[in-house]
Image 1 (cartoon, rainbow, N blue to C red):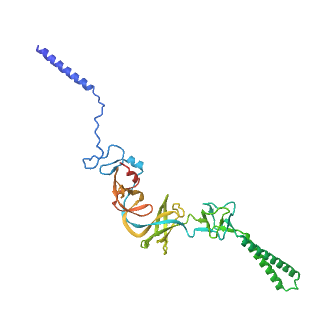
Image 2 (image 1 turned 120 degrees about the horizontal axis):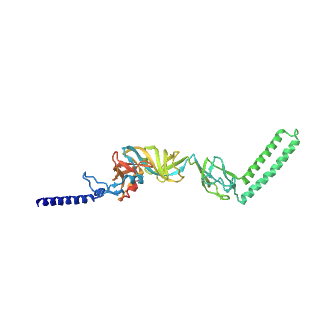
Length: 386
């Protein structure tokens, strides 16, 4: 009986063990461990810094800085420049306009009242290349009936005198030897003078004036059509050399013009003008002094009369960091600021004080430290991150 109890106890133990083994064998050993929750956006890490958001989209963090992943930075085309605080030349901003060079521009004006006629098959057109001395058009004189009648009467009188002089010369030729040679020569001179008078009067009455190009260049303006009657001194064509232009700028404070350096620039659509300082006039125009700059070869294309803003360098200096103008942005309050790349995927906005330096650059005098990486390309796109 005792032996039977021991056997039953052992069997019960084996049954329990086999049941537990079967339960363990049904488990999935390939199941992943429970996922660990990512830190919330703007959460503070154990080190006291802001943790990066879990998503790959750019976000504005709680302290106002931006989190921008590397992939998004490449899509936005962000570029930075290391700020170097140093002494840079101070710049003077002047309002100006593009003008034709005095030695590379000219006007074609009517010398008298007349009717415009084409010199060839047609009149010159805008942009046409011409050479110095080339006939652009002809001006047929226009006179009233009284003046024409007086000229024709004078021409008839000269014709009569010329006929008498020619007969006199012919008669003296037949009497050669009987008439002194001095008398024969005098008759010939009188005949030649009458011929020249008749030719000059006839040419002035019927001849057309040739309008020639004063310089080599292109036709920049045309103010006539075929058959148009113009008055004396009226401008008919304007010719300029586009490779030799100038810029006139106005300075309302004569004290500011002292110490202007030779280098200057002006921003225009599609690029910038590289300018050289020529000189300053000593006569006021519109209550301002006129400063003349020449446009250096290779600058952007501009048109005569186009307004520009000239950035003229001076001999004075100011301490700051030279940056591209595209780095500066406007805040909602109207203040200026820049974006500084502080970490690999973090950008911080800083208020700055800036002044113009050139057509493409400005100098930041406050708000940027030595070695800061300032965003120069795509700064305006960062401000749209919310």
